[in-house]
Structure formats: structure tokens, C-alpha cells
View 1 (cartoon, rainbow, N blue to C red):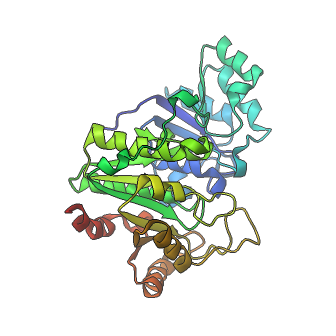
View 2: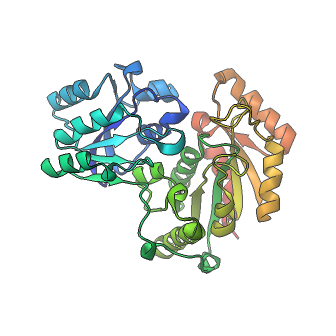
View 3: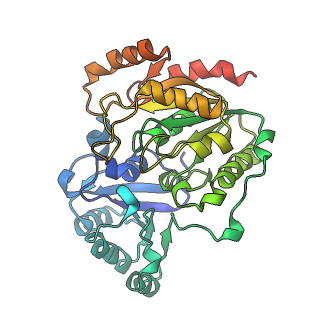
Length: 358
């Protein structure tokens, strides 16, 4: 049985569910150990099952028109949420103006509010006062810890004696975190001990025990925080495999993540997530996506490590296009390619199992 770290939650994703800007909500309805997700707010899909909308697989988590109808229906079922979670992940991490009124409603009803945006709710006196009045808490997940709590790179990563895998991507918002979790769960189900290293706010919200939030960390400490998370997971859990969630992509103009993960996390191998029908970097028309082969080569040059497999993001593809697309990628790169979201992660686990015996 799943152990919930915090409690029942309602997720706010108005206007963004089933789009790249709703990826935090997507992660939470697919998997989280932090919350018991009771529902998602997005009026465009009201009355539908969030799993059916997202993955064509029902998950029993309904979509609601607005906060009032969600709270009324859930409370009537004896399932009142204790948390109101911002499931939006817009470019720049800014809070939409219309969202504040809904957050005020949640706080007025005594719900704790968790946000992973760059607009810190705890900097808003009105929201802070509401939280205090109603005896509830606001958590800004992306708020950087005080500098005396941050870690500088030490080289302790070299002591980690287990298989380390990094799931990187050819772009941002391309499914790296979901693939990383599927790998962790797949290894665990195959009888191995696996640990996830979260590097973004959504992984923390999903309950990643060892994590840091890369895009809000002070630059001097990014490598040290990645190293600290990996070393802590190794020392405390003694896993067979550690899977590190990627961020952005090496060549994305706005989110050039990945270098610190390669340099500080020092993975043994890389799995690369790719969306064949994406031709421009997410959110940046005119910025042509570098080819898959260019990005594979860049990873090799930067880290000296190999990409061992490509995982497919099937956005804008029909089910019938997936297998031919995987075959084409294999022909072009010489690497096996899998759609783990549709077909499962077992074949990828079998590919990686021999690398555990080092």
C-alpha cells in the first residue's frame, strides 16, 4: 500500500492540463507519494477522468470546472482535500493573475497551499495573512534554502559504487521525469533497489526522497546539491541503481540544463528522451531543435559517457506511428528506442540489467 507523506490534495491546472504548461499536474496524477490526489481543476475538461485525457488510461482522478464545485463534490463524498497544489508549470514559472483569487479561496477554507512557481506566495502579505488566520501553511517549493544549508561540490560522488543513470532530453517538457520514475519503479519491480534523484519541483511534489531544485538553486551550489543528493541516496539506501532526473536540455536556449547533471552526478550511462515530431524548442518558435544525433554527440563530448537508449515521447503521434518511429530512430542512431509510457519499461530494464553487474 502506498504511504502518503502529506495528505489528500486538489490540484490547480486551469487552462493548462494536457499541455506542456501542465506538466506538474501531469506528474501528480500519474504518480505521487506526497499527496493523495483527489482531483484536478481545469474547466476545459470538467467531468472527465484525468488519466483518460492524459494517457488514454483511466485513473479515477476527476477533472473539475472550478474550486467551488470541486470542494463541494469532494466534501459531499467525505473526501475533503487538505492541500491545494499549484499544478501549473508555465514558461518562467510565473503565477497567472487569475490564480490568486482561487488560492485565496483555498486558504479561506483552511487548505494548505503548495506551489512550485518562481512567484513566491509567501512574499504576498495578503496570502500570508489568510494562511495565518485560517491556521494553514504555504510552501514555496522553489524557494532556495539559505546559503549555509547548501552544499559545494567535494568529489564525494566518486565513492558512489552503484549504477548511475541520467535521463536527459532533447528539449524541456519532454517527459524526462516520467521516464525516470518508470525506470525506478521498473527496477524495483524486477527485484533491484532503485532510488530517484529529483532535480525539479514536481519530483519533490511526487515524493522524491533525495532531491534538489536545479533551476532555482544558486549557480555556485548546483553541482554540490546534485552531488549531495546522489551521495545521500547511496549512503542511506545502498541502492543497486540511482536514476537522476534531467532538466531542460543541453542546447535549449532558455533551459540549457544537463551539463551539471553530467559533470556532478557523473552518470555511468544516459537515456535520452526525444519527441520526433517536435521541430522547435518548447516555447521558442524559430529556435530549431538540434538533431537527435547532434545531441547524442554533445553528451558524449561533454561527459565521455554513452547514450545507451532513446525513449520516445509520442506527442502529436498516433498509436500506429509509434513503432515505426522507434525503428527509424534505431536505424539513424544505432540505439534501441522505446516508448515506455505506452509499452512499459520492461524491455529497457532488460537492456540495462547487465550493466548492474560491474
